[in-house]
Amino acid sequence: MARAKKNWREKLQDSKDLPKIIKPKGKGATQYGDRMLVPSPLQVDAVMKKVRKGKVMTIANMRKKLATENNATSACPLCCGIFAWISANAAQEAEDEGKKRITPWWRTVKAKGELNPKYPGGMEEQAKRLRKEGHKIIKRSKRWFVAGF
Image 1 (cartoon, rainbow, N blue to C red):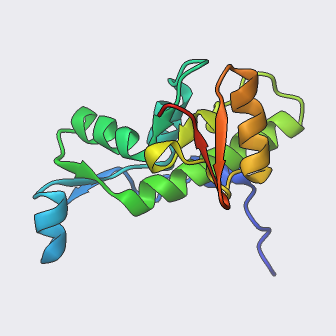
Image 2: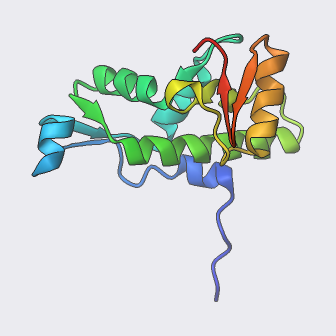
């Protein structure tokens, strides 16, 4: 019997035996230090929930915060990016079902304030929500950024 595909909120709740601290090897040890956090999806979601209205946070800043909170030298960039994407989609799924208090995923941006095309509704939706909170959005070719970041 085929198993039903998980929805976004189920994916967010799936800890996958995380968080854990790993010791990177080779080039990773040089780049990420000797204690790299592999966070759980809910840890990433918790940091995203704390970004206040009118503010934005980069994934890099989120990684630093998670590493500090967990006594690690760094946090996995790949996992943090994927889990932010899961969090954003889980929040959108909840909003689509009528929930009012959701994770403000639109306040989490990529490096240099770049909007994320993989978030729900793409850069257009993220820009719309950020503008509503007072941010100015600048378009540079196909990439969009929060002004003054």
